[in-house]
Amino acid sequence: MQVNGQRYALPAPGRPVVGFCMDGTSQDYIDAAIQAGCMPNWKGILGDPEALSFAAFVQRNAQAQLSRGTHALVTSAYPTFTNPNNVGIMTGLPPSQHGISGNYYVDDEDKPVIMTSAKLIRANSIFAALARAGVKVTIITVKDKLKTLLSHELDPELVRSGNVRCISVENLSRANTESLGVELGFDAGSSQSFETALNYAASVSKDLSEGRRAPDPYHPHASSYAIRLGTRLALDAMRNEPQGRSLFYITTTDYIQHAHPPGEPEANALMQELDQAIGQLHKAGAIVGMTADHGMNDKSGFNGEPRVVYLSDELQTRCGLVDGKTARVILPITDPYVAHHAALGGCGFVKLFKNASAGAQPDLQHIMKTLRDIPGIYTVVGAQDAAKAFDLPIDRIGDFVVFGDSQTALGSSRTFHAPQLEEAMNQRRQGGKFRLRSHGSMDEATVPMFVNRALNPEVARKLTTGKGRNWDLYAILLNGIHPDATPATY
Ligand SMILES: [Zn+2]
Image (tube, rainbow, N blue to C red):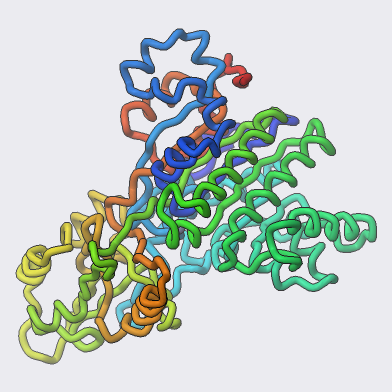
């Protein structure tokens, strides 16, 4: 089967392919959880997690290697946000080709265009193509917005018949008794499958949602719920349809990672949840892969104050540009309509107004150079160069791209972000542990890639030489497994 110029093999009968995208999970989270003894399955499958250098890899006994899983660090898509990366995994392509560069961009009339609509995606979905080829596809997200993007090209007929399921935990949390079966992708017409749906929701909810049907998307257990639900559906598919072809994509939210650094009990518990899912699926015989959409870094100073460069303020004081009049600062992490949700991320786009009535056209080179000198800004790159270097869609990144350094977030103006930061700092004054943790910069681009099987030499070489990307997840899981690989026993 051919999607976006790349060949994909169908999942083998009775052997589901299950991919996890753990939102905001850098390798540090995994390492800390392994240290704390929370990831026995991950360790067991890899066999020898120390032997991961290239030299060690080639020296491994070839036979032993074939009964081990694979682990590597790969690079995510830029900017290191959720939507560009999830759409990357769905299409197998970078943002330059799929078109999604963040949550929104502004058009030539300075109108914000929200990129949470699947209409703006410029490439084909691997999931939709597999579904049309007869594979039973299940997609599970936490937030409904991401479900909308990942529903791209899914055939409504296949959705109705239950051969394609696209489920968000957010929708489940709001579902009433009548709509629950539909939300879970069970055939609403049959009373038996309706009972099954209720049982599913009840069993997965246990311990995770305080008696509710499903946790709301900002509940600390929302990601765990998505992982458990997806795992349960995959295990059931193997039991109920032993010869069926099925594929799963389970993508979480980074609520935990924004609030907790690696090694904190909440973070370890989430990694343990992933590990248990991997262990169960591995033992049942599934092909299991895991990657992340981006990592996460602390963006606060030693005193706990968030480190932020306010781009609108800087452009005004240093370059005389007024946000909304002569320039527009776009923070691709935010939703432009919801001011109080204005999050701070590591990447910003700036668009200069071409017909600024204020006389002379702004001097792009001078503005970029001025911004580069500000402490906390890692680099500023013109749109042409940024599109080339970072695989970005040139028409959706403004005139230039600003990256913060690993410890600094970018905002628009201090006044715009003040209410949110004030609330956070209040929490801190009352003894809370708040520190700003975020992503979006180049420093959150290194993410893990885990597969529970040995890979064919070509793919293994790509991964062990640092050339792997997270959007390769399904190319690896569907085409890259070594023909003689056997599941690790431990
Ligand atoms: Zn994310």
